[in-house]
Length: 322
Image (cartoon, rainbow, N blue to C red; front, side, top):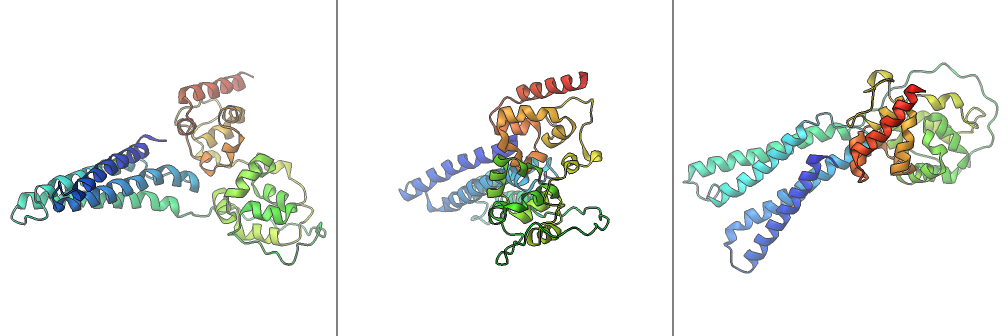
């Protein structure tokens, strides 16, 4: 887990402890009820919101397969949110909200409340682009020649939709496996990954992540299986998932801690063995593998990033020498 998502979560637990202690103290009548505002905001903004911020920054970019567009705003968000909350609590206790005659405290209270509002706006500004998936357009292919009759008709009582999970489709119509593989879902050729991906991924989301046209794929899944889709196309297996101009390294470069794993595997397929040995084969079914860095994946699996990097670069050096 990255530094600031982890700090958000640690801070949220600290605020929960403080808020709970204040609540118990008020319940025993040892603390003035005026502290109810502080108690509520420590638990609501301090615990709940901070926990949501940290977990969302860690999980959603990986789940959606898209990196944060403005990662440098995350530390700004963290400090803005904490300064705003702590400042509001202190100035409220000093009479910044209740004592309207205390203009200094009131002005500072309003300023720190503005910090908290700004923090929420930064969060929305940074995370909404991750959640709005834009489907990548594929080049228009030349019209295909007419194919022979299908290997078998599709059962008439089944209609596949984008909201169905891949595993559900494969279970109801196993012969569609090669349709998926030829469409770009190469990982499904591995039974272990097929089970993991099938249970987790909804077809529409999977198509958005891979840049596959959902309507065209549904037409193939719901129609007769052609001879073309009845077999796996070997040539398609080497198609890169990341455009060459977008790769962060090229053949001859050494891997770094901030190198995206997806880029590393595409340039140096040999390094895939390091990930399989350390993380297991199921790690490649996660959409976030395309954008997670070497350091991030190591931290997520409680591995030493430097050790993983050394293993990857050892294979890179061997590949370049060979």
